[in-house]
Length: 238
Image 1: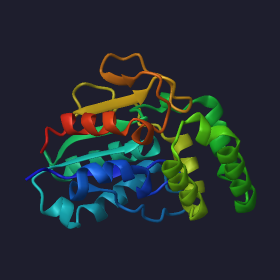
Image 2 (image 1 turned 90 degrees about the vertical axis):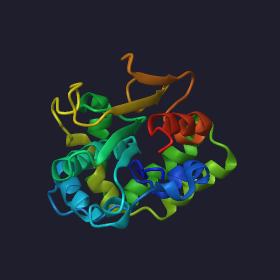
Image 3 (image 1 turned 45 degrees about the vertical axis):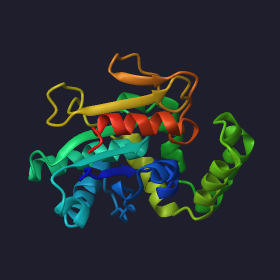
């Protein structure tokens, strides 16, 4: 039986971010809902608590191995959760799949770090205005989304949990895993794919990173066929 693939969405997004992958992988793909963060909790602490809950679910408990991954912020969370799972159940994590993400704090550009820290402190009404303005003024067009994908993204914004979003902005901006995930000696393989023209995550020239020519940030939408093939390849069809 094919091993489960568990994907976590990016900032402010939900499982709808992976609807193209859900159509392809069906019941093999799981996209857990985020849990509520605690006050003052950083990403590592949050993911430790999240991992404890996930380990009690059937998808973890009843399988002989899982693949974890995510897009952007979700990829960072996948690394931290995988680390906890691996400590408690060595060999359980068969691989980590990073989509438009990365394994060090260097993926967070200085300008975004400043914007995220400011955004985390804004009143909800101003934050929503800023997000709507960003969405309306070019992000959807810049990412070359089709109408269905644009509707999915707009729907996510309409039901955005601002408390979680503001926490995740701060957690993303302050994430610092050191060199824990840089070494080739990590207890699980790490696979990375990104768009050549991603304006959010810096372009990586590392040979191990698969690069999609001309692609931007939301490659799970715009290059779903390539992403699905990449996921298949790196989860070995099972």
